[in-house]
Structures are given as structure tokens and as C-alpha cells.
Image (cartoon, rainbow, N blue to C red; front, side, top):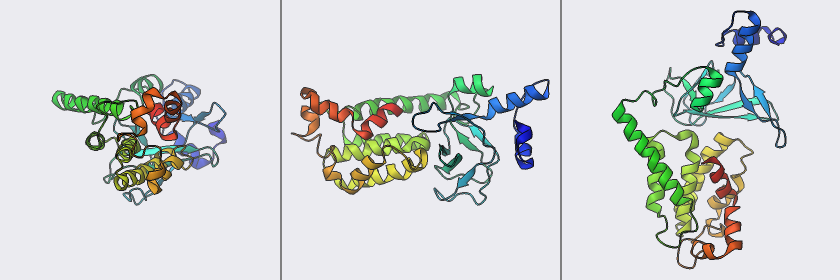
Length: 275
């Protein structure tokens, strides 16, 4: 396999981490520890990709001068988001926050995946917090979970979630440096403000959700059209004034057809799958 790569490709592969007593064992280990799953089309099961030299687009935000990536490591608070383009067979990666010169590029993997597939335990800045810092962070994560469940509940006829809760969620995402999933927080904020008829803020947060979502999920992001409608014409979106008296959320619990339509909403379905 490696012998069929061009010289530059072989040089890049030789820099990867691998173990083994023989050349074949080392090659197999290096490949296994440095690949990631990549879908090939909507119907296929996908496969694996090994891309030692992807391109980085610096326009979101403009933080790097060089467009050559040497290494991508794990971090529980990633500073980049990427997707695999199944048409061009290229990995496209974008910065989701300002990255300081010399700072490593991080994406997030599950701990079990790190240990089983990549062979190491996480030692990122988040996992290396002192006990008091870890407790504060854990409390924020629990609050994010609590707010998310409330904001995603459109069946509440009493004590519905408020716009203050949505703003709190956005603030917590930022405090926890969860920029690689920031589109979710902004989407909840857009939907919540729109559910109270606050169309200007709904449109603003929809714009922010799109600005992150297109980079995180790629140009074929399934939720783009729903977000675009919420951005350009929030009054015509199903969420508009839905939490005001007489709105959808006040009768959805007693209307199975309406409830089903709400649950199948493009944005709502996508958020349920991601959370």
C-alpha cells in the first residue's frame, strides 16, 4: 500500500506514530492509529481515510498564514472542525476560534476511541484541569444538558423555556470553549427568540448558526435550508410565536398531528440526533 504512494506521500506517512516489530506491523499500526471514518455517499456505509496533509481554510476566522497542516491531535475542546467531501475525496478543515501561533490543532474523539483505536488516554488542557476546575467545568456541562433538554421541549404548556435560558446556553458554550458545536447553541437561541416573536434576534442567531454550521457540517448540511428560512423570514418559520398564548407549543401536547410535524422539523430532528 505505502509503496504505491508518491515519494512525498511516503515521507508524510513515515512521520506517523506506529508500533510493531516488523515493517508490515508498523505500517498496519500507523495506518490504524491515524485514520478516521469517512462516508462516501448517502447510502453507503463509508470507509476510512488517511490524509496526512489536508488543507486549512483560514477565512473562518483568519488566524493562520500557512495552509499546510502537519499534525491533528485530540482535544476535548477542539479548535477546528472538519468534514470529508465524498465528491472530491478531500478533507476540509476550518478553525472555529482564534488559534495562537504555535498552538496545536485539536479535534475531539471519544475517550474509548482514543484508548482502543489510537492507543492513548487524553491529556488535553480540559482533562488536565485541577480538581476545583474540573468540578466547575462539570457543573457547566450539567447545566448545558439541563438547558438543552428544556429548550428542546416543545410540549411544555406550563413554565416554558425562556429567552434568558437560551442566552445562558450560548454563554455556557463559550465558557466551555465548545466552538466545534456552537451551531447547536445558536440554533436553540434562534428558535427560542422566534418562539416569542423576537424576530430580529432570531434572525441574528440563525445567521450565527449558519456561519458555524456550514463549516462544521459542510456545504451539504441538511439543516441549512431550515436555518436559512429562520434567518431570512422568521415570521414564516413554524417556531414563530409558538410559545406565546395560542401558539403551537400551547396545543401541541393535545394535537398528535401537530406534534408529529414539529418532531420531524429539519432543525429539531438534527439537534435531537446530535445531542
